Every structure is written in structure tokens, then in C-alpha cells.
Image 1 (tube, chains in turn yellow, red):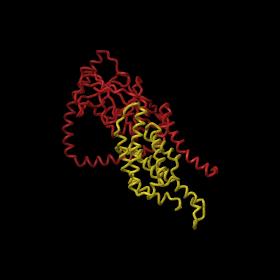
Image 2 (cartoon, chains in turn green, orange):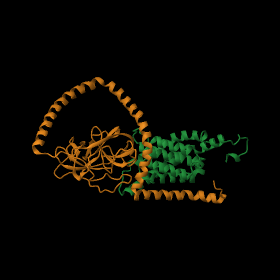
Image 3 (cartoon, rainbow over the protein chains, first blue to last red):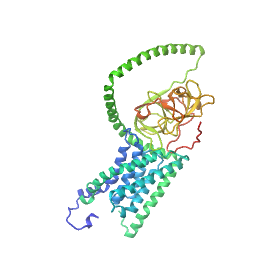
Image 4 (cartoon, rainbow over the protein chains, first blue to last red):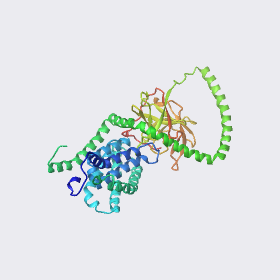
Length: 182
Length: 288
């Protein structure tokens, strides 16, 4: 992609290839690292919910603004990692991340032209839908009615943490995750 | 990389997501059908992360201890007065305990009492919270060849913590007694009534199915019961506390929110194995 645009550019040396590859893999790698750190032994209240909220926020942001670096296969890998780290039934978090990715891909042409508030409101709706789905699948898998409190908290946490996440990720999007700056 | 024509590549890109969503459903069903596989996957990752968590846990615990020390320094004078008073009372209790112990030994000797089998234990460090949105559990870091098996009983220095549910090569997962899959047979200490302690995922598990004619009393001590051969009798669990809705709950004696060192006891009891946790089990609830 980078090579097709006209203009003066440095020689395509090995170092430059590595630089481009590192920048392309930044979104998925940083998300995986963030998840591993968030599962660490910090004893924070609501840490389990934080893990799901971070995964949803990161996958939604990168699917929307840099889908080339967040293909479905990587979303799948991140989903499996989230489920294994949260010790829940494998598949629920995975399914939610894939659906969030699909929705972001579907709406990205309209959404990327909108301001931050619109994107955030859409993300809040996605997080609420994810909460409902998570609650329903957990209840279905255990054949019993579960308290909705934890998923409501997780959805609220995801909605609240997204602006913060977006500020940091938007900065990264324009700098270290930008292959054109290699 | 294989070179594909542009329409083929577009078609491939379009079907990837549906295929992966189908695969996610497949994983969901596979995990439900084959809990052993899901457990093995969880513990493989836990084994890989346990040493890392162990490294992180130490500075975190030190920082917490440091903060506690500062708090203690501020309230040292009042704390000293309280401790002196408490020490006096405890000395009295010690005298009573020694007398009772001697009497107990004499009585047991004259009754030809069969002593409880001796237990062995190993100690491990709690390195991470291994719960999740719908589970309460901790991950312990254990060395290789630890010899820990499922169903072993975890205690901290104050009381019962839970039971071992998943065993990996270097890590062990303990299901806390507050988890909603946890059911523990208990004895109400003063009335000797039996009950079941049901986890709710909240900080205090609930008492249910207590013996007819016996009412749990506020502040009463609750200990494990040897019924169902899952626990030895008499391990301290906590104290009864009634909620505003008059539901008896148990305030755990163990400090479950800040576990650091946990002892795993092998009483050789395998009457009821701890529940599988990756998938919650069906249970019929009956309220008193």
C-alpha cells in the first residue's frame, strides 16, 4: 500500500520492512499485552470486568480505524486469549469480540467520518448489546438465571473507559502504529 | 504468500468473519461438551503465566504492606492500648484452653477415642485472581512435582478458603467458598444443626437447608461438617450474619479478598469432588 503512493521515499531496506511490520502488528500486540497486564495480580476490585471491557474497547477501536491491522483472525486469537484469561467458558468473549468487529467493519464508512461523541455513543450501544449477549449465553450455558449485575457493571466500565482508551489509541494510531511513518 | 485474484480475495475476506463466528459457536459447544479439554487449556495458560504473576505479586504485596504500615504508625497509641487489653483477655482464655485440653486428653484416653487421621499440607502463594465475571477463584503458584490433587482443602491462617478444582503443572486453581458453584456442608457450632453453605458470588455466602427446629443465631460460629465425606469436621468457616432481609449469611473467617499464603490440606477425603468450574452446574435453589 505504502509503495503505491507517489512521492519520495527511503529505500526498501530490511530495517524499513521490519519497521513497517512492527507498526502493522502494533494494534494486536499491544491489545494482547494490555490483556495480560490487566489479568495480573493487582487485586483491583472489578478486575475481571476490566479485562472484558479493555478487550472490547481495543478491538472496536482498531477494527474501526485500522481494520488492516485487526483482521478477523487476530480478533479470534484475542478472543480466545480473553476467555482463557477470564476463566469463563471459552467462546463467549470470543463471540462478542467477533460480532463487535463485524459491526465496526459494517459501519466504518459512516462512523469514521463522524466526531468522537457519535463513535462513543455507538460504542456504548455495542457494549450494552455485548452485556446482554454475555449474560444470556452464560445463563444458557449454566441453565439458570444469573444476576445481571456483573455484566451491567462491565458494560458501564467499557463505556466509561472508552474515551480514555480512545485518546491513547488515537495518539498511537497517528504515530507508532502508522506504517506510512516508517 | 499465495497470490489470489482480486475477486477471490474479496470473497475470502467476506466469508472469514462468518466462518470464525461459527468456529466460536463450535468452541462454545466443545467447551461445554468436553470440560476436561477446556480445563486443560485454562491450566496450560495459567502454568505459563504463574511464574510471571509470582514475580509481579511480590512487589504488589510489598506496596500494600507499606501502605498498611503507614496506616498503623498513625494509630499506634490506641492500637497498643487495645492490644494490651486483648492480650490480658487472651491470657485468661489460654489458661482455660490449657485446662480444657488436658481434660480432653484425659477423657479421650479413658474413652479409647479413635483419633482423626493426620493430615498433610503444602503451602503455596496466591498469585492471581482466577475468577472472572461469573466465578470466584484464585490461582496458586506451585512448584513442579507439587503432588496437589483435586478436592484438597485450602485454608488461610484464619479459616476455610475453598477447594482445589483445577490442577496444572505449576499452578493450581482454588474455587473460593463464595463462588456460586460452591456448596459446603457446615455445622452451626452452638446448636450443632447442619446446614449447607451456598456461594452467591457476593462477599458472604448464604446458609440454606438447615435442620428443622434449629435457627441460625446472629454471631454464631460456623464450622465444616464431616457429612458427605468431603471435609473433616470442625474447620472454621465464619460467623453467621443476618442481612436486612433476614437472610442468614456467613461472614468468612478467611480473608478472601486479600489472600497471600494458602495451605492446601490433604485429608484423603474424596467423597464429593469439587464442582467443575469452567461451566456452571445446574442447581435447584430452594429458599427458606
